[in-house]
Image (cartoon, rainbow, N blue to C red; front, side):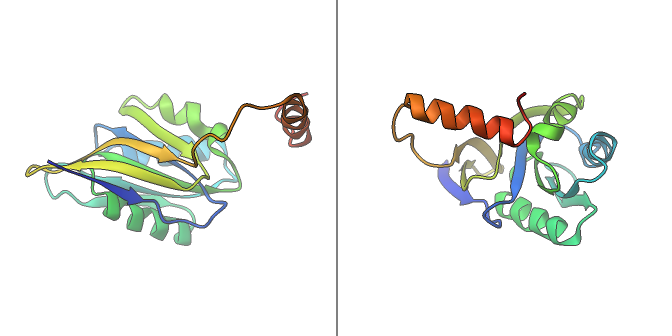
Amino acid sequence: MEIKTVTIEKPEATNFILGQSHFIKTVEDIHEAIVQTNSQMKFGLGFCESSGPALVRYTGNEPALVELAKRNAMALSCGHCFILFMENGFPVNILNAIKNIPEVCNIFCATANPVEVVVAETGQGRGILGVIDGVKTKGIETEADIKTRKEFLRMIGYKL
């Protein structure tokens, strides 16, 4: 077995969700979940089929994000994983809708951070072991950091 990392290639501020499911139906179900939950969201989805023709399946409503999803899915090439890039919304806006799709098994990350995906490769194929999401923790927040965090969440409308 060989362990390697795959860096997710994306524009710096672009959010994405990386997950795993168990059925090709995932492609259409995620598409429907997004448009029903946040119709203004622009997105591109890539899904790695792990049987039969083993293709990267894809969908979306923004061609540049669809291309980004296809490229990253192909770079991953891990069975039944999906990667969803988005604009005009955030993972928090659609994450529960995606987690509630019956064939979705796991969410590895939902972030705009730089991400490296830890992948194991055997003679049979590839699988995701985990992710490195962002940077190493630098310390513990101070009272000033707490104040800044609370002000930020209220400024962007996530807390009252």
